[in-house]
Image (cartoon, rainbow, N blue to C red; front, top):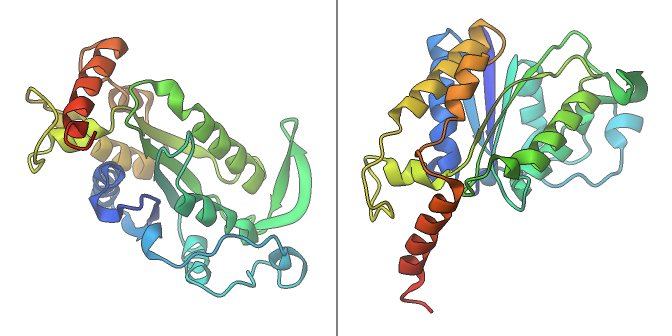
Length: 254
């Protein structure tokens, strides 16, 4: 059975907008026959990397820090698909996700080689061929806001996986993420002046999970659906609506 691990970096954990994307994706993976497990990084003890390089030079593949990451690395070695999920913070990721990624260093071999013109670490476990999926959401309405996050993960994928062993096989980078909660049936005090049906998006998340397990990637058709605008509005109109909603929210404290 294929194993899918999701590492969710939102400080709001289960109650986050990010989780509203992750869980349907994992449901699709389960429907395709995979087992899934979610790790809420904000609930775990993961100390930032100390840069000691013991995992390279003293105890190959084993970190000197003793916290929750040791058990996680063992599970990663048994997995097939790794989902990195984080809300967009400061144009990239949360501190929880950053610390987690730093602590993946034991998976790398200090030796390097040139792959497709770029340096990459030799795989410590060359028999592993993990597939990576990147999930994120942002309050902003412009897709370009994900550029730094995506570039960082693409570089990390290349460096960690020797250019070959950890390809990013799909992304769900959702702008206007606040609208997911606002459109939810359980949303209270919605900032929206109208009803918004985005069930099609969550259905596409399920489909994406199925495809990664069954096909090894998110298809272009599903990718396009996942990144379809929630509303048929220009960015300027969305900004204006958001500004009005913000004025209401801030009225009592300014």
